[in-house]
Length: 203
Image 1 (cartoon, rainbow, N blue to C red):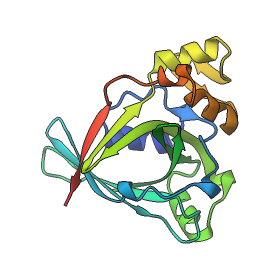
Image 2 (cartoon, rainbow, N blue to C red):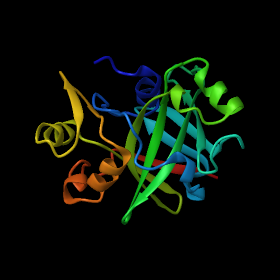
Image 3 (cartoon, helix red, strand yellow):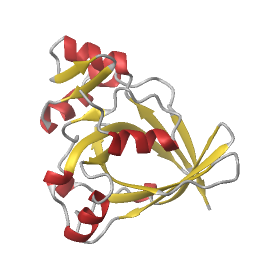
């Protein structure tokens, strides 16, 4: 299984995350019915080993479903240089007391963002999703990323459909089955107790 780098490498470039297990074929909810979480809109800052990363988050093109957001990543390196900004789309899912982000990976790394922005939602352009849990408290944003071992155990036990290849794992089950998993005790065990990343809002 080759990792779909359009999503995973972009996220890794801005976060100090180990995302060997970063994929799901399907999201946690229907993007066409997603509600916009306005608490996420704005500019967020992550400090990573002295380098500074900003995420500019806003509502996406009017041609996309109303709940879809765009994030623009800007990274300032230690040597004073700035990396080329990265762009990706995401939408929120609420399950029980928890909130999740469906970060959208695209098959076409270079032209996929523009195609979605200009032409509207086209499922055939989507390669995968990165599913993360999040919590907003005032001007703080915490992100939890799935633990690879927990994901692997669920797939091996048959509690959810997925693919395992070396150190990589990927969920392949339906949106409905994934949402049910997240609502269960097994779903809670997918994520560490402490946040993987912490962000502060830029005012």
